[in-house]
Amino acid sequence: MTTAFVVNSGSSSIKWTLLDLVSGQSRGGIVERVTDHAEAMVGILAELGNEHPDVIGHRVVHGGAVFTAATLVTDEVEAAIERLSALAPLHNPANLAGIRAARAAFPGVPNVAVFDTAFHQTLAPEAYTYAIDADVAREHGIRRYGFHGTSYQYVSRVAAELLGRNDAKLIVFHLGNGASVAAIDSGRSVETSMGLTPLEGLVMGTRSGDLDAGVIFHLGRSGSTLDELDTLLNRRSGLLGLSGTGDMRDVQEAAAGGDEPARLALDVYHHRLRHYLGAYLALLGGADAIVFTAGVGENSPVTRAAALAGMQWLGIELDESLNATRSPEARVVSSVGSRVAVLVVPTNEELEIARQSAALI
Ligand code: AMP
Figure 1 (cartoon, rainbow, N blue to C red):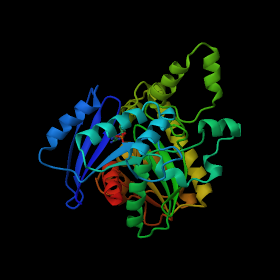
Figure 2: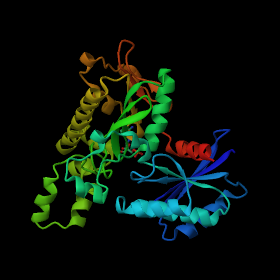
Figure 3: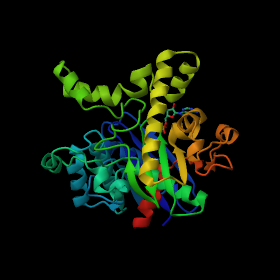
């Protein structure tokens, strides 16, 4: 068993990676403006040439409460992913189209579904339950699920290796265009900031994160439709809504140049990071390490410094020069005297999907 083919199928694009799990080598590509997933997959098949994958791993966004780990795809599994589309109408149908196309294009090769939600199925009822009418919640599957699970699994394992222990309490910030944070104890997720959908929690590139649900009623009564509100909160909010751009580098540049809306956007973003950090320290009873990953977390010393400023009293202290150093490696950026380690760990969701898929067969 050596070669894994990883597929991240979206509504209009298919990202693929071919990984040799022994040598660690990989290559990949992206097909954009996809209208017919089956046709696109046949094109990718041609690009693979003579290379024949031993297993195909698929990213699937929503596994609901059904899937607690990576799962070999069967017709029943396909049907379950389809039923879960109600919870992720933009993502699951696209993921499923990729699965169906791969099963047709690579007959005889096992397909594995790796779910963004699975890692958080260890959350306790008090963490995943929304305080709403229990019958309504049960009927509609309304609870917190959490996302970015594949990234958390990869990053928490690397962090454990760096720390030399498996029983560490970690607070992991996955700060990309989508952003969330998780509290992880001994490799198990105990709390995370995204909920039923990826809308809850931190300020993101274009998503609002936490807000009073009353905002939706207020705007609805003022004439907005549900679709308009969905677009507003998922696509026109966050950094973009506050500053006019959803890209963190541009927001930081504008703020440095004196742009007030960009400054406020950064302040709100950082405030929310600190809010969750405090909450998760309380839930975990302290932390052994705080870990930063994804585009912003890995590359922005400014964000890490703002999130952790003035926390020496909690035993959290960055080393300014380590924090400012660029490197593609997983590394420690806290000072020697910091009681809580601060780590930067580049995430690798494709590798994690490949490993979990290979492990399953
Ligand atoms: P991702 O979704 O993980 O690819 O992350 C994308 C986000 O990372 C975008 O908002 C980028 O602006 C941000 N990003 C990438 N590099 C940097 C950097 N050097 N400083 C600040 N933000 C960055």
